[in-house]
Image 1: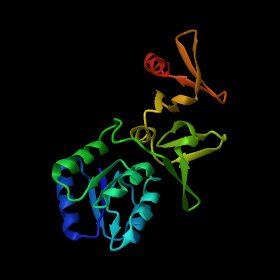
Image 2: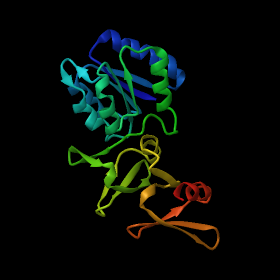
Image 3: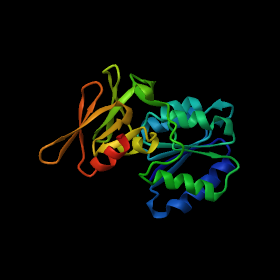
Image 4: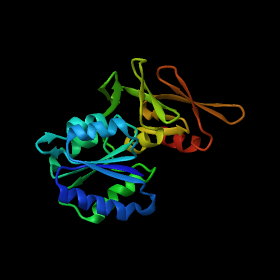
Length: 232
């Protein structure tokens, strides 16, 4: 794990680092700390990361300015903040967890465990997927996304208006964040269940999901029975 802590209070940053080191042990490769938005943005732009632990108030600066950019990256983001009223908005933007201050090691461990898991976690109320567009970040409403295709370390978002956008997060990471309205029907596809028009069974145990827009998406053999029961 390569982790960045973004926290303006040195005492709290050291406490987070101590707890994080204790949790990950030998699997923690690098952990760094910055205390301003500018430093954090610069560090994120120049380094590969697995996880960012972000405070929302940094010497009066709004952490959401960084959050909007951070959620467009390949890593997961966990908020550690006293601003509990911002939790729902943070989840809607696509954070993995929101740890309210004051916190203990048990609550932080719970959040860190989610970062190391591939299972769906948290309230799954993502409303936007942030994508990078020519040195700026654009928020894509989740309601506009029909299906998502894995493209190596990246994903391709396919929209209702037939537009396609590239996202830096892997299919596995997006699967963790998205609500059950999106189903992993194949190793390379996440599909919005409401967009499935028909499930087609072909010879040779070949299964296909026909979407309302006419798109045909393969269904993994091990996924067919579960998908059919949920679709019906």
